[in-house]
Image (cartoon, rainbow, N blue to C red; front, side):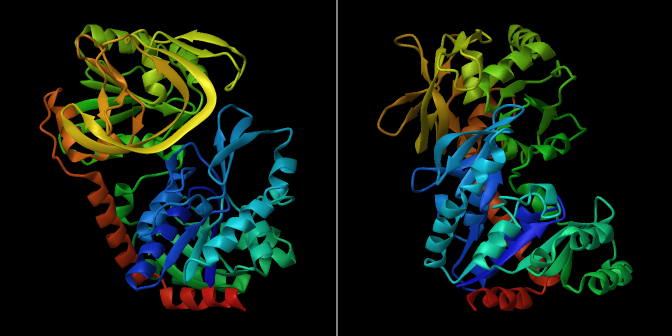
Length: 486
């Protein structure tokens, strides 16, 4: 089984996208390829075919590889739920909490679980494309590392280092990474890629040669800024400030950027609507008064983010929006926040207690230790959809109240207010359904294009693969990956 690992000079250098593009390119060549990320940290997650959860980027990479997402593709997932704590997911299931006090010790014991998943993947494909996390240059985190060089050396997988030229200093970041690594770690790196180049790549020829000379690594290519990337779901919340499309007379859909926002790719399908302007509202900014629809997104810490919403005055903005006849949609934790109360008697997210919600729905939520992870299908607003549930909490509503959706089998989901302006659901991913998205947007005067977003993403992956075939030496990368067998 062949394998190659892509590590970065920092976060958000484009590793996830490159791995996805390579998975699609290799799959198009007829190879059985699978993605792998030993350890991820993200609140954007996806439900897997084996009933667990993995990082959203690995689910996208599985789609690129034309494979079903599986927990072995991301055996360790950390989901930040406070300033210094993260929920620990191992093989798709909650195993506990890691905090600053036990982080190093806790992750050190996870390498066997990582290698267990790694071994299973090797038996299922011709080649595995591995993604690191953060950067191996963070040598203060090297002890107990399972995400970068700790894994690469344990599994003996050759590494290609990715640098982001768009942020500047790419020569220093690549050469500097070589300088700070110890000799055994540096020996695992066999080459580099320069990513996100704007302009004529020939102008960087001397810089490219200089990196090769100073590191002893070969270059595998210079990847330009690729337009297809904008159509792919992102995993890192750092991109949210770049999400708002500006200008025009389009209908505004606004979403508050909660500190612990989760599964924000739920909103991606709205970006493809030509008559919609999606506005991601950062802290310190009021929600726009001319919004037709406010979407309250998912959150990894519902109670804390509800309190933050009040601190920002967003609760006042939402209530005023509703009084003016504006529509509100709550997704998962957003649904919980729309209700009357959110109780955390077991202290799952923090100190035990109860907090008042927005009171726009007659619903009360109690957070529980059991996490529901399930793919779902159903009908909502008269349109079919498919999505998934991923939440810890049980919400009760009055008898004979109007649900937002009916899942297959007749199970009700969510709630719609008596005036029809406020809707809440536990279902993620439903806006990807063109029919449902059109039914929702029609209520705010937008026709909606009716396009299934999954087709948009799949076409973008094919475009990405074609671009990488042009700008990377993929034959050489495949040859490098074959060395992992030896």
